[in-house]
Image 1: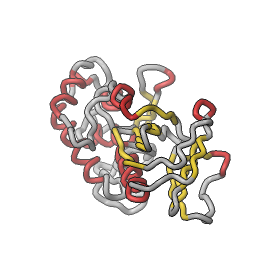
Image 2: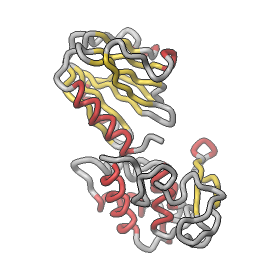
Image 3: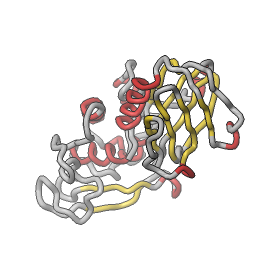
Length: 258
């Protein structure tokens, strides 16, 4: 599932391939921007901000959000794509690479100077150079009556955490996802742990257990009905969110989390 670490890794990979290169083809397959042609423009940088990816090309920025199903792929010319062409939302080519954005939840093109305005609502970026833990804590504590899992997933509080990390953090801190944020005894400690986890995972396969082997990487997420890795109690599953549209799956151990 794409979260802050996934987008960070994607940005790093794309930047390494495209930085300083000139586009030889630009095919945007979103109606609003289908007439935009950046052919001949230079790729200055590919960067991430929370779950958002920014490709700065010429004087504009291609802003994308992967949502649940999106991904960016890099191919050598003549290589078959790993996903069907009808899922492609953007195709950008240079002399060496073909870059394809598949099923992007958001794809828009804005002047580079509008980036700050576009993403102004985001909280501190866990993987950003200007990470501000105190500001993240302050924002979280403004929502004391909100379930802690909902508050952690709100990108206005912290940019980068998705449902996997939220559930894993609640387990590691021994807190039920439904517990109001105001009842969490050590919010700064939870934020510090979030920062350590996502920072460690930005260069590797995501794991919260410390074990990168398949099927051993997570404590509770996606493990409903399976035994807790700590106490053996069966993991439970529920749904939580501010509104029906925002409902997300939650996973917890009824013994380790109280």
